[in-house]
Image (spheres, rainbow, N blue to C red):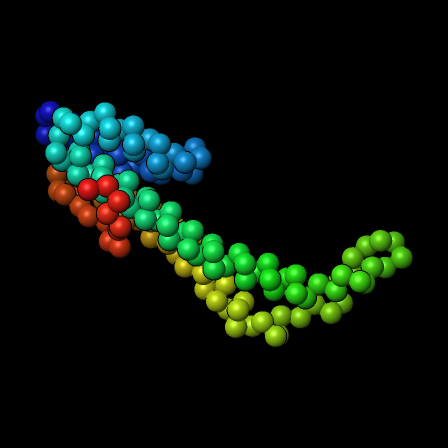
Length: 151
């Protein structure tokens, strides 16, 4: 495979993960298709394809861990503070004794998890762009904090 073609395919492999904003699971499907069709033709494309998929899978694991922290905390806090027996005469729910004061520590942990998730998505975007630039320059790039699922 020609060097320019290798660089272009590797660059597109990284950039294809941005399809997640348009196509559900596009950040997995499109890089897998590109990587599997070109991995035997070029070691450079194989390296970047593995890095791309490992990074996306690592982000999935990190997201699931953060969700397992944040979602139960918010659900527990809201359900604990809902006065189920209070309904007004029009069958509308009354929110008069809703207090987060007793659960401030748990809510803080949940908010930190949400903040880490948002930060992770911003960092993901810039790392994808940075990896694409490295690939287009013909350099091998390894994403930081990536679990090597595919070796």
